[in-house]
Amino acid sequence: MARTLILCSILLVASAGAVARQNRIDVVTPAAPELAAYGSRDIGVRTFDVTDRNRPDVLNTKEGETTARTDRTLTLEVWYPAVLRAGQQAGGEYRTLTRDPTIVATIRGRAVRDAAPATATAFPLVIISHGYPGNRYLLSHLAENLASKGFVTVSIDHTDSTYDGQLAFASTLYNRSLDQLFVLREMERLGRPGSGNFLAGLVDASRTGLVGYSMGGYGALNSIGGGYSDAAVAAENAPPNHLLAERAASNPAYRSSIDERIRAAVAIAPWGMQAGYWDGEGLRGIRTPILFVAGSTDEVAGYEKGTRAIYSAAVNADRYLLTFVNAGHNAAAPYPAPAEVMTDLAPSRESPFTHYADPVWDTTRMNNILQHFTTAFFDLHLKGERDKQAYFSVVPNGKDAVYSVTRQGEATPTHTYWKGFKRATAVGLILEHALPQR
Image (cartoon, rainbow, N blue to C red; front, side):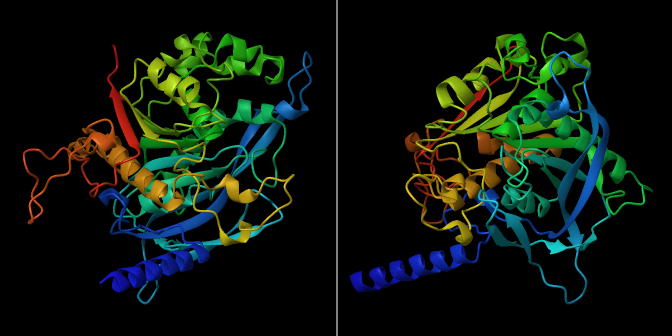
C-alpha cells in the first residue's frame, strides 16, 4: 500500500511538472474551490487598439509650462463567449513578453483566436488592469475563466507601464484610472448594436466589473470614487502642473466623473496607501461593492498600512477582504511563471521568476481561489445571482471552519466549512466583510 502511495505521488508530481512546462493558464487543480472550474461556453479572443484623443501628456509637460497633449493609444485583448465552427477545437496560444522583455513566453489556454462571437445576448463587461510593469496577459487566466461563464473581458496594455515600454512612474500615476474609464466608454461604443464592430450587441456595459492588480488596483480605487489626497497632488514625484487634482477628493468635479456603470470591483494588492495617495476623506467616496485581495506579507503595496488600511477606511462601501496568509505582493494575480523565465541569474540580478511566483503559496492554487471568488462576486453584482452570496457568508478564518459531512456528502449541523471548498483547503485564507456605514 505504501509503495502504491509513493508511486501515485511521483506520478502526480511528474504530471504537475509537465503541465507547468506547457505554460497552461487554464489549469484547475483537484483542490480548487468549485467556482474555479471553467464555464460551459466556448471562448473567442481578439486584439485591437483604441485611441484617446488629446489626452494630457505627462511625460512631455514641464512644471509651470503649458500642459502638452497627445493621442494615447492602448492595445486591448478581448475574450468573449463564442460559437465554434463544426470541427473547430478549443485552445490557442499567446506570445507574450515577460518581466525580462528580452524573454518571450508562449502561454496556452482555451480561447480560439478570432472565433465567432455568441451574439444571442449581451454579456456583462469586466475590465482588467495590470500592474507596473505588466501587460494585458498577466491576468489572462482570469480573463479566459470569466469569459467561459458569460462575461466579456477586456484587458489593457497600459502605455508607459508595459514590460517593453516602462517609462517614468508619473505617467502611470496620472493615466491609470483614465485608461480604465476610457476603455469602458470604448467598449460601450463598440458594443452598441449596429456599430459594425465584432462586439456589436455583445457587450452590456451598464453591468461592468473592474479588476485591478497593484497599480491597476490603484487606478480602480480612483475609478470608483477613491479621490486622491491633496498631499498626493502636490507630492514631489507627482505628475506636473497638479494634474492629479482632476481626480482628487477635494475637486468637486471629480465626483461627477464617477461612472455608475461600474457596479463592482476587485482590487488585488492595490498600491498607494502607504505612499499617501489616499486619506480617510478620499476613501469615504467609494460606494461601489468591492472585493480586496491581498497577501499578509506584501512588501510592495503593504498590508496593515496598505490594503487592509484601505479596506478599513472605505467605510461607505459594501466590502470584503480576502487575505492569503504569508503571501506577498503576487497574491493570486499573475499566471504561473512560464518555463522561459526559469533561469538562474547572477546574485546581483533579480530573477524574472519572482515577478510571477510567491515564496509560500502555489500560484495555480491562488489563481483558482481568485477565479472562484471573482466569479461569485461578479455573478452576484453584475448578474444578480443572489445565491452567490453564500460563498461569502463564511467563518472568517478558514482554519477555524469545521468540515463535517456524512458519507453521502450531506452537511451535518456542525458543518461550517467555506462553501465550495474541499476539506482543509480553506486553511491559510481569511475572508472578512464590512457593511457600509451609511
